[in-house]
Image (cartoon, rainbow, N blue to C red):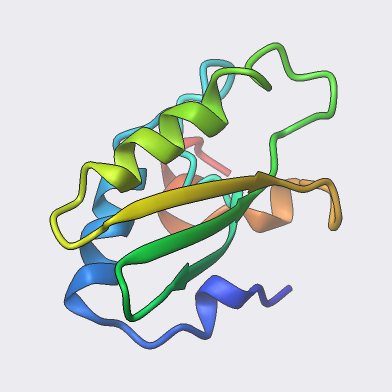
Length: 109
């Protein structure tokens, strides 16, 4: 399955945003939100605004009120980012197929 963030060209700012996202961990699965596949899209505008589309492992996830705020704070903390907006989406729904290779190795899958 291919998502928008997989088609965005690598830039130094995008690399720093990904590093920031890799510091945020899902409390139920010991993998960061980026490698877990919860980040669907990262849109970086020329004016430094960043828009992130993300999902959670389940619509009933108890972290629904916490993780998007953590993502927003982490992205806003990256030098060169003027502002960050996070949109929580449910389509496509999360599946274990979205895990990165690093996440699969970490979980012994």
